[in-house]
Image (cartoon, rainbow, N blue to C red; front, side, top):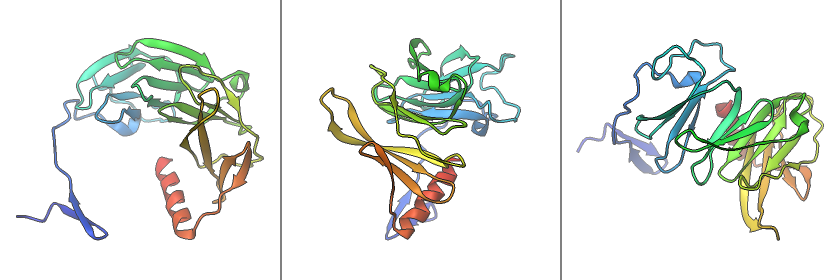
Length: 233
C-alpha cells in the first residue's frame, strides 16, 4: 500500500480521493467570481465579482458578462440568469434557496433553478451608505454599512424582520464578521445568535445582551482566529 497520498494531521492520517471530475470549462477561474456552494453536495452559484478588475472568463461563453450561473455539485449547468446587480455577498439558506445581498441593501432570494422567490430591503440605513460587508448563514444574515459601520441582522428568511444592532465606534472597517447560531429561541420562535466581529487592531467583539463586549481569547486561539479572518479577505 502506497503512503505518498496520505497527509498527517497531528496523530491522524488522511487522504483525498477524487470522486468525480468537474465538467465545467477548464478555463473557469473561480478567483474572478463570488462563489456560493450549498452544503451536502448541493448546487454552486457563481456571479461576477464586481470588486475585481480582472477580465472575467465566462463559464458558458457568450457576450453578456452580466450573468448569474448555477451549477450542480459536479459542474453541470442548471441555470444562467441575466444579472445587472452588484452583489456584496451570497450564500444558500437551509432549504437551498440562494440569498443574494446587494450593495444597495436589497436582498434577492432565488430557487436553485434561478427563479426569483422573494425580495426585501434591509432598510433605509443603506439608502445612502451602501452595504460594506455581510455574513449569511443558513437561517439569516448580518450586514454592516460601508462608511458608518452600523449593523443590522435578520434571523428568519421567511419572515425577514430587520433588527438594528447597537452601534460601535470604529475608525476602520472590521476585518470580518461571523455568527454563532444558538439553539435557544425566543417566544416568537426567532433563533438567538451571537455575532462576532474581528477588528483591525486585533480585538474581537461579541454582541451579548444587546451590547458589544470584548471577547477575551487565549493567545493561540486569537492567532488562529485572525489568520482565519485574513483567509476570508
